[in-house]
Image (cartoon, rainbow, N blue to C red):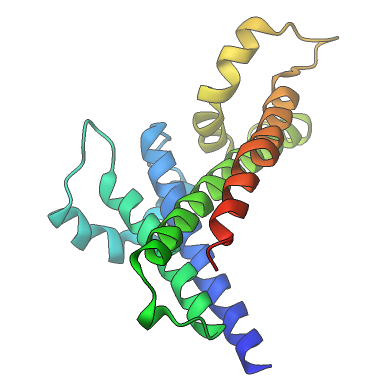
Length: 191
């Protein structure tokens, strides 16, 4: 029972921190408005870890590699500690197990990234019907524009409704089902 409680706390804390790091990475990558309260909150939550790492790990071609590396490290720690709490003998594990843990951490980041964009598209679509002038709208627009704009240019609207979010949601679900989940299953076979 204590192991389950520790697993819950571990997943909650590490998943939320990884989510904040990935949001920071994607907000910077898509050049979302920095003065927005959402962007400010994400930066405030992650600055304590990103600033020291940024001194050691420089950005590459305008990409914030320190934030992405921290997200991968956090995901790797979550995978490792989860196995350790379930009495997996990590201290005597060979290199293949550590590579499998790294692969699971990477797959976890991919799944979380897809989930971020899925929810951003979904929330943006809902807000466009209810209240398109909220504080979060510029951030959602910046996050989803690289996905939706190419589709908007090719898919005509149906009766005034933009169908591009529907195509993004379907494509993302298919990506998870056909590529991400099988890769994760292959990596889990090592444990």
